[in-house]
Image (cartoon, rainbow, N blue to C red):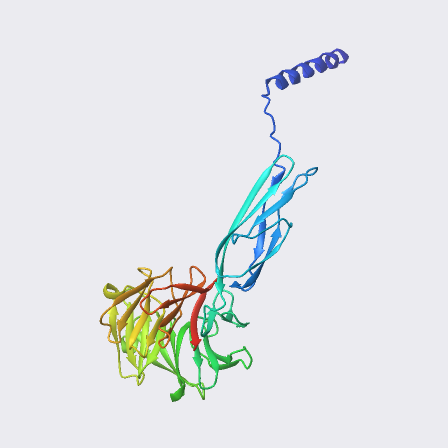
Length: 371
């Protein structure tokens, strides 16, 4: 047994040496001593305004770093984490150059700042992703459930919104105080249209394939139009009211695109089908020029037509679904939301001069303006 142990040791050493000699030698490269990185906070996103930069660069131990910032407007800084005031709206590319004794690293980001003078109206919208109602360049407040529809009661300076999770119509003051449930017992309700002068509101219900009529003073509800009883298209979403008529978008296959029903319940008919107008979500009436504007998500466009569906015109190209729209006929503008980009935009009524007036939201949907 002793002889066996004495012979095994050199054999193990020899085999280990053989294996070791067969291993290739790959040099390990030295890690970069400088990796530039930063985050930023644009504040409210308007100019004039201050943007704050946070330096998140890494430096290997034993090295020191210097920093050179280019803010994209002709200004610069050598601070580690500076702040910079932008005087004008626009898109800027910010560059951070980080230098150590043996390395250089560069990081860059692009920002877009809006003009504080971009809006000459007050604009409110619902962010369904964040469960909030917001005012552009103003304050907002939290809501309890998923919402698409938002409308304004100018007579009482209040706003109304739909709560699809609870099946309720809600009301509050513009600052979010005085929240009250107006009506309940409905399904997956989406857009809404107010007729305060006649003590009525109307909402589109995807679950029940119905348009509900609501008495504002009592909260009483009744189905005005349904697919089963009245031939309304399935999956109604968008809704607006003008001159005693409800303008409705339906998004189910073979139910597209725009329907019109009288508020007295006497009948609902389709004025635009898929072949003419694709399918889409938001719809708004321009009461001055007597046009309807509506979303065509199938083609990624916003369309305009006469009230009877005639003279269809492509106004502008959108990015994905536009649920919310508002027309400023006196100012010659249309405002609309884009779900995919998280933007609120403004354009001339002919589709020209498209401007982003607010950005960075999760799921902007219904909106209204106060001139």
